[in-house]
Image 1 (cartoon, rainbow, N blue to C red):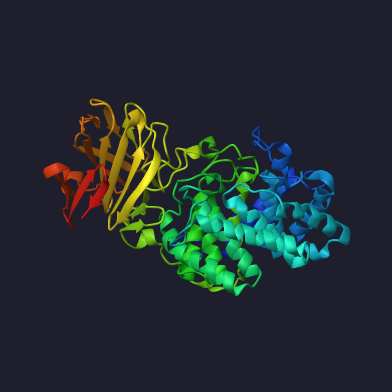
Image 2: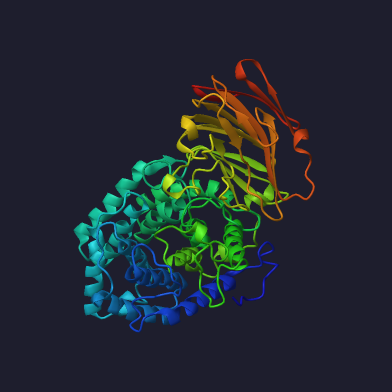
Length: 560
């Protein structure tokens, strides 16, 4: 992708300005045009992969997701082409919107795009096309959604249809129903789980916050905007910490092929005035993520977004991932709705949290501990509260980072009796420098775990109970990667191969761990000391910090 020259004065961290975002959007839109059908209703991208929804649905996905990008860009020429596709699509080309079907997802993108660009697209259509389009979208008001972020798709469609006066009563009901349903998944401090359970990932930002806040903003509904915008602002305090100094988002959760869609909530806060972040920090984090992916092969030599993370990578895909799925990355161009003279585009870039200082930050709702180091810009997430076994290993590992990916060799796991499974994760609390949880492991065991972090160093403590005496336990650490040092040192209950055996009344296993890009870090043993006390108590002595006492038993974990 040919981008403008970088601007080190205005953007000393990334070099990117609004011109880079505009060029990236224009290049992506130009590259997809050859793959539109003759009537422009479907976009079929090359490759032999189809999603489980099939080729027709995948073609609709290509139309809807690239239309949303064109709407954020407000490109009248491109929107004219999409107007032709809309006319053909609602004349019988597109599949109907039915219960729990993928067209419901794409209908939300189409409705949002039409709402954002109404004078440029919708208002220029002839009456017959508008009537057919409203009727096609109207099925979304009555379709059953999967009980997760999908509940917000009828809300988004309803917002547009209410605005144009189509089925106003049904539209209002769809909006109220969807907003009511997501309330049960709001756990405080700006955090939603994506449906029942504890499914925490980027859907919290690019879906659970995005759709309600945009709806409230577009409807000019002060009450709703205060509610959902307040939650967004609180979330962004934590969210800003999920990006490494190199711009990388944390490699955790599903749908990672959406890549820089991770920037959507950053722009959303600036767009609606509901953000704790300065304009310069907002742009630095967002531009950092865009640059991170563009520099690492996210776009192929045809100008198309690939199915993967950097370049093509099937490991980050799900069954619903089709050829056009990556174009939800277009959500990351939400910032182009802000005018060129907005401070988010004109203010000098400011460093993000990972660049400012070392930090170990407890996040109560997801029961996560975030650990970042200024010297190398790495961010690590210690997961003691998120689980979705459908998408293991992107939810159930003990830790994730901005520089490593879950490996097939079960990194960051406790392997009991040869079984690395981690299910029924029960959060046991987070605090100043620590997080704890309990889970079901292999061989019928229950594992209680505590991680303690300071700087780049971690103390990982596991109590394994319920397994047959003599069952082998193996503890693993960070996956290896070029340019990054991953260390794991046995301390209690483990041999040099990080293996041990269970005792009849439960056993403690302790290791020191570190993931760092520093070229010559201090020896691990000199940074922290772990001592065993009476009745299984452990004392953790940091060389430059406090002494903490840890007790793990059948009732849980206590850190004092």
